[in-house]
Length: 462
Image (tube, rainbow, N blue to C red):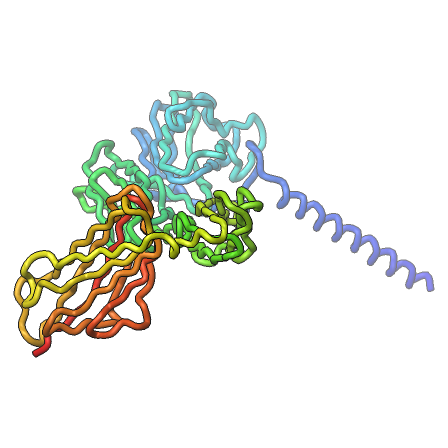
């Protein structure tokens, strides 16, 4: 029984020791290294670059290869170390001991401060002697000025950079301020190339100019959705690239109504149609005067009392874009049909068909000072049997009053067939009674100065 407790006690003590070791290890891993602390391996978020035989580090005079290790040491005399690195942070490690120089100055991007691995007693292997974080992601210059100090050494064992960092060739290199970027169509961004030596000529190219273009200064323009590689090349063939992702330009939001004005008689109704870009945006309808005209959630306008009201459609997606229609309501008994009916007959203009004298009849309601004009032309000069061509009718209200309930009637000239399904009009609808020999278009109201264009596709027959 006594032995049992002894074994249990020993195991319990060992467990406490193990827990303690793990806690210390976890604390060391969790805490970032500080100047003067041993750092035998890079911490998370860093990567290590050995200084041994590293051709991207330039050493001044009086450096020697210490014990064929590739770790170059300076002894006593003045000298320098020069390097360039791309990244956002840097650490320098050396064995810290009492034979190291104390007066060296490190210039990072021309800003100097002391750097030393001197330690008056003992030794710290792979001690961190310099650290800078939070730098701009670009190419940085490092110059270490090493003074004369009797019987003292200066060297570097390792350099830690961020995970995407690297040492650049100190004699010749090129890099861009960005390795990737995203543009939308028709937007641009200026890329900047840094070269060693400074001022080296750079030629810019795009792997796909249909996606993104680049000019001689490095200005990149997104053309259409996709990915392109922008390359900067020196005269010696060194290159740096930036991957450009172009995204589709957002559609310009808009809203419009099928009518900007309309006329109603009390108790009549009409449904306005709102068209939005992008399609499908919800619309909220309102009336400036519900005693004149009301409007429901579907755009149906109902005439209530004589007067004028503005019906407004507003997008409800937060953009608050709007479109309006002015509604004029007249009392019953003032139907435009009861007004004087005016008939306007116009002849085809020119001699561009084999029978240009086809008459176009326009019927509308209004006062005598309501004047409509019409010009009818064809898009060909000469035609032959079997040829297809198009008549264009342009109707213009040149008077000072609105022409109401306009109807255009165009009979086909001899040897001409109309294509009923191919008739188009900028206002109104093609009447269902239309045939290959006669086209009728119910245009509706034409305001003073208003124009309506009708196109009739036609075929020459024997």
